Amino acid sequence: MNPDSLIDQLIEAFRCLPGVGPKTAQRMVYHLLQRDQAGGKKLAEQLTTTLDKVSRCSQCRDLTEHEICELCRHPTRQSNTLCVVESPADVIALEMTGGFKGRYFVLMGTLSPLDGVGPAELGLELLKARCEEGIAEVILAIGSTVEGEATCHYVSEMLKPTGVTVTRLAQGIPFGGDLEYLDGGTLVHALEGRKQIV
Image (tube, rainbow, N blue to C red; front, side, top):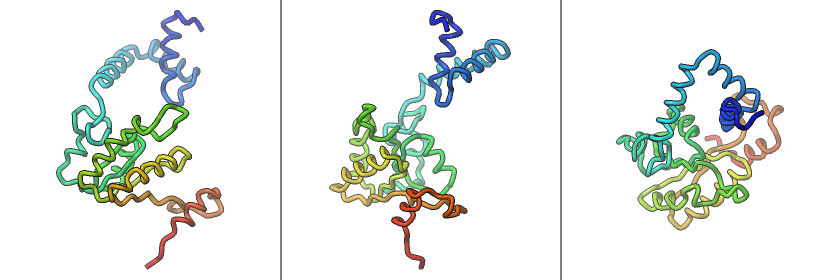
């Protein structure tokens, strides 16, 4: 690899994408250079435009082209229920279900002191301020990783003085799943989160 070569610099630039290693990056670059230069130029222009014009919503921190995103501006969404998620992709996943009609708050990650991600980077002061403005319930829709568990604990402790009800998405056995194929951690979560059948 020649660090002065434009091709090698472009290959290295493609490696910033998740799941893109050196070989995949090389294939992408050579495809654009050999077969689709017009597509490469369009990609570069669109990427530049999007990076320049997309920022975070001032209310929920989701990605948007406007000061306040479409979901926060939507007049029929429940304004007293707030679902806290890790990323904008989680908002999309929940919206695709059609089962949640409240508002969102996007952390853009989880607490990870070793990586320099603390409460300020996650916008937790903004979350607390929103909860003090009439939120009745905060639903924590955060993954069950070590960092996710720490984040849920921190957020629930932070919100205790506000009087907001803090809940967490149920975790455990997936719909259609068989017990024999589940790991021990999933089974423990399922047992701890069991509920009475009415």
